Image 1 (tube, rainbow, N blue to C red):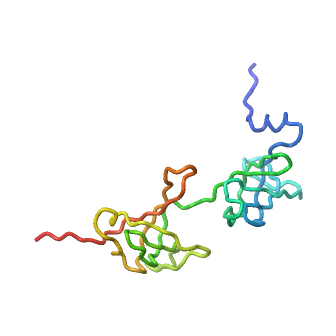
Image 2: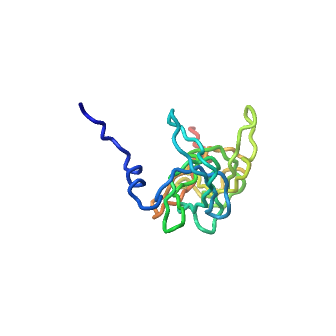
Image 3: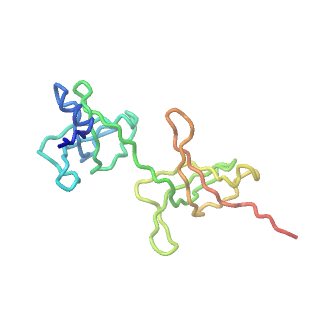
Length: 184
């Protein structure tokens, strides 16, 4: 008769540590900058997670700048690690890969400021709540001319793409034709 020896490495690591070194948590509130309040969670019988106990932890999210605004939404589950008495997580904010945006101004040289939009009906949009203007480049203009060809209030689909920096920075691009070629 064989015995199931499959175990999760994180569970074994937490068991052998002298003090609780890791804990599954749910972020329940943003405190300030990259600090959050969280509560312990455990897996339920069907594989979901549920809150356990009334304890709270103060977490520092190492994936965000210490002086920036926190972007991790409440109800995000994570593994928190005790780093010398300070609980830390590494949760990158979720960034949509592509989204509708309104061009708000041209910066010249194929660069624009855009603002994320939400659909409000068939063919109508409004500014997404809590979003700021972003810098985006029009791929169609990068090699075809001097730029500044997209009118303000034009709705475009913007793609978020990481650059090759360390750590990578998210860059925003869209492809909106502005120079038409006509056949004689």
